[in-house]
Amino acid sequence: MSTDRVIDVMSLAPVKVKPTDSVAKVAALMREKDIGAVLVDGGGDMTGVVTDRDLVVRVMADAGSPSTMVSAACTMHPLCLRPDDDVDTALETMRTHAVRRVPVVDNGVAVGVVSLGDLARLRDPESVLGRISTAAPNH
Image (cartoon, rainbow, N blue to C red; front, top):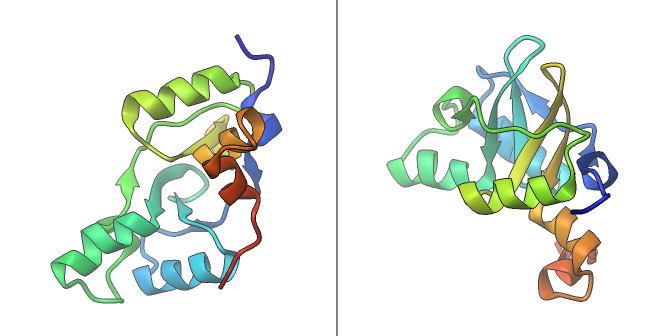
C-alpha cells in the first residue's frame, strides 16, 4: 500500500463553472488554462464534471450549439475522491471506472482534481504518460 495521498499529487484550485454556463465558455476556459476537465458547481457543492471528450461526444457529435448549457454535456454526480485517500485507492478507482480524471472533494467542496498524468508523474515518471504529463504545452 502506498503512503502517498491524493492531496500530494492532485491539481489544486480546480476551475469551476455553473450548470447554466455555455459549453463555449467551458471550451475557452479549457484552452486558456490548458486543462481537460472543469468542475460544475451547483451553488457551493460540486455537482458534476465536464471533460474535453464530453464536449466532443455529447455536444459536437450531436450537432449541438456553442450555447448548449454545461448541464447537457457534463457527468452529474461523478465519483469523487477525498484528499486523504491513498494513491492506490485513486488508481484502483480510475481503473475500475475507466476514467482519466477524478474530482477531489472535502466536505462537499471540490478542492482539486487528480488525473492519470498526476499519478504517472508520481509512480512512473519515465513512462510515456509520465513524460507527456511533465512536458510543457506545445500549442
